[in-house]
Length: 199
Image 1 (cartoon, helix red, strand yellow):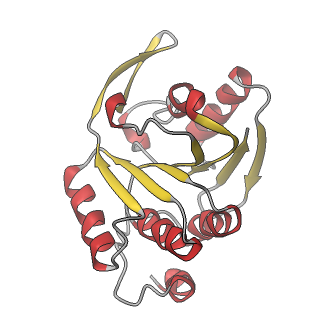
Image 2 (cartoon, rainbow, N blue to C red; image 1 turned 180 degrees about the vertical axis):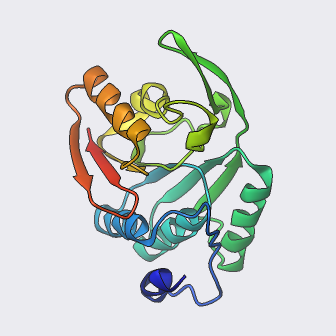
Image 3 (cartoon, rainbow, N blue to C red; image 1 turned 60 degrees about the vertical axis):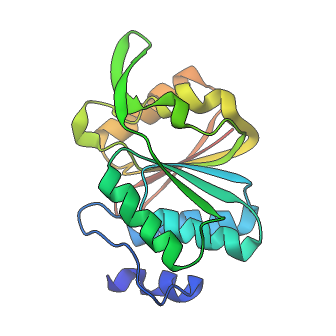
């Protein structure tokens, strides 16, 4: 927990945070997306997965006086826990946690477990944070994010992929770049790896 202390101080989150040892994003990854949110002031942040990142990005939007985090969460209990923290800090106007169960989704000749499409807000996305679904559910589990969401990305959108040191995530980035060659890619050496792609 101590590695998150500076983030808690920076964002004045003194009433606790929804930290889960096995599931929460690393503090170094969260620092990257927090800094980006405060710098670029996105209007809509779409997040695949919810939790600690949702709370911190919502606080950033409050500090910006602008923006909304919409988080897709396939686990109902995790969605409820995140909502409890959002309410605790009075951030409900800056964050929406959407219970979005996974469903079989055909894509490019394969089938993926992906969030139900009608749960995705029909707005232009300025910042996309991908930390779900869980990588263990299938090979390249997070691949659908870009093919499904690409039409909604704004022309200044930045994409942040967590766990980018894993072989699956490296393969996913290569597949995305082959399908969308105009994407620029930067890899950051965080504890679990972070890939940043810009449109």
